[in-house]
Length: 242
Image (cartoon, rainbow, N blue to C red; front, side, top):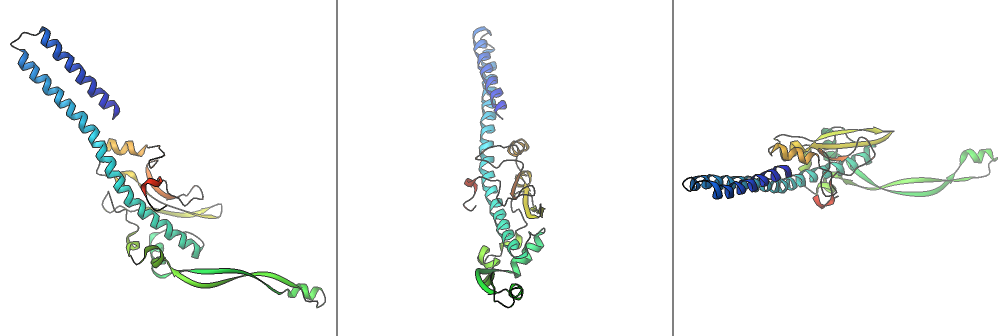
């Protein structure tokens, strides 16, 4: 867009120069008509320049609002996946599994403690001399329901697959698997889906963002299928929750 603005400014300056030349060299009878036409062109080009800047300002304001909605949903997905892994030992690869887990399952609250018990094998080996060994016991103290803990009485988890803004009916892409036997997951949505009704050149520019203050790349994502990571690719200023 910077190139467009520079081009328009150059044209405006050239037009002003032409007006000056006309004032100097064109016959008086033709000057009023030509001057009106040229000043009309200057005003039109100025309007185009203003709208180019204003459209980008509007786009950025809308982008921030929509990203905030999407990020809140991605955080819900991440928190739900972490609870799912704590119980199941892996991440859910479909939203149906994740939503059903939130609806019916609970996460145990446990306590680890060490205690001494008789080591029967070593006792026999030492001719009946009692030999003790230390073992770790895990006691279940209580359970907390994901639905109540993360969503606090809200049923928004039922529609967590929906992006919620941008393209009608758009849903997040959810993946899960293992990376060198370590469970990983990723939830993502293309920026083009979130901003589907905006100017194409602005969306393309946004997809190429590389900045500490912006969402880098063509997608909003949480988690990763390429590394063990459960964070999102947005900066802190986009959400109060991290």
